[in-house]
Amino acid sequence: MTLDEIKLGEECRIVRQNLGGATGQRLMDMGFIPGTKVKVVRNAPLIDPVDLLIRGYHVSLRHHEARGVEVERT
Amino acid sequence: MNDPRREITVAVAGQPNSGKSTIFNMLTGARQHVANYPGVTIEKRSGKYSYKGDTVILVDLPGTYSLTSYSQEERIATDFLLYEKPAVVLDIIDASNLERNLYLTFQLQEMGMPLIIALNMMDVAEARGLRIDTQKLSELLKVPVIVTVGNKGKGKEELKTAIINARRNTENNNFRIDYGEKLEPILSLLEKRLSEDLKISLSYPVRWLAVKLMENDSVARRLVEKAFSK
Ligand SMILES: Nc1nc2c(ncn2[C@@H]2O[C@H](COP(=O)(O)OP(=O)(O)O)[C@@H](O)[C@H]2O)c(=O)[nH]1
Ligand SMILES: [Mg+2]
Picture 1 (cartoon, rainbow over the protein chains, first blue to last red):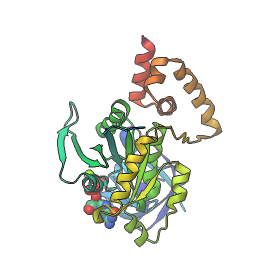
Picture 2 (cartoon, rainbow over the protein chains, first blue to last red):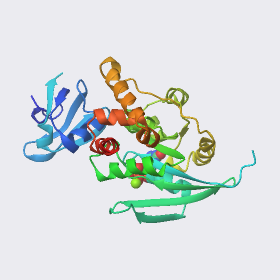
Picture 3 (cartoon, each protein chain N blue to C red):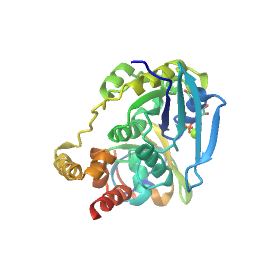
Picture 4 (cartoon, rainbow over the protein chains, first blue to last red):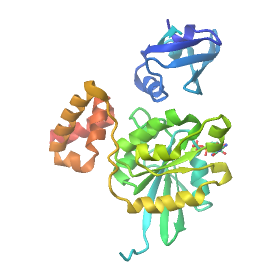
């Protein structure tokens, strides 16, 4: 499953990310690497952004970006 | 030695919102100059101050999470470090986001930059119940670590002293990230090949270039292609 499918308040773990280019690099810089826990603190259908808590800080992604991150439920 | 008065250039690096501008203002006060980096619309803020007979010129690098070639800001920061060769890089770290901020620090280390760390936002970190062993951090990274609270002016004198001392300390600190048994053999091979080319090895930190090539970084690739095509 992908990060955009995780509901508000739920936690998951990153399996991998498939975003290439600048966005993929930026996520890597922010520590989106396999095994990292992510909590979803805002996720409304069709409304950007999806807000996440990762490694103690907040990151906002667009839905289509969140779709590029494969995760598993913890 | 009888040191004449000197001018040293210090680049101020850090991730966005680490408090880079605040520390920059704290050190330079009103003596600032704003221009653009050559050929781009990204603002280049510089300023200077005198300290114990030395003139220190500070250059505020664009705030970036990393030093890859994906954004103009990152390329500008990287180019400044590679080609202007500042005497010292002052790395502003948000202590309340230590892990993420250290990623940039490691890249600066890998570039062989003489570093000083300002562990900023220490008040925020403490309010969150974080306690950071700054001495241990300094030992592990082999660089001076100064605690600062930029918006309160805390750590100003300590930073100024550390900057002057750092420029006298020209030895390379040999900090090295171990990329593990799968990647290290490839890295050594690349490092060896790159070292054989004098133009490259005299101009660029070879280990850094090897890591960047492994990341398929476009700027690194171009540097090497250019050197080997002659
Ligand atoms: N609490 C606290 N706030 C700080 C500190 N240093 C800077 N700030 C504030 O953090 C915000 C971002 O700082 P700024 O210098 O603009 O960050 P920059 O993006 O790295 O240039 C500003 O509102 C500053 O006043 C600090 O040590 N503690
Ligand atoms: Mg700023």
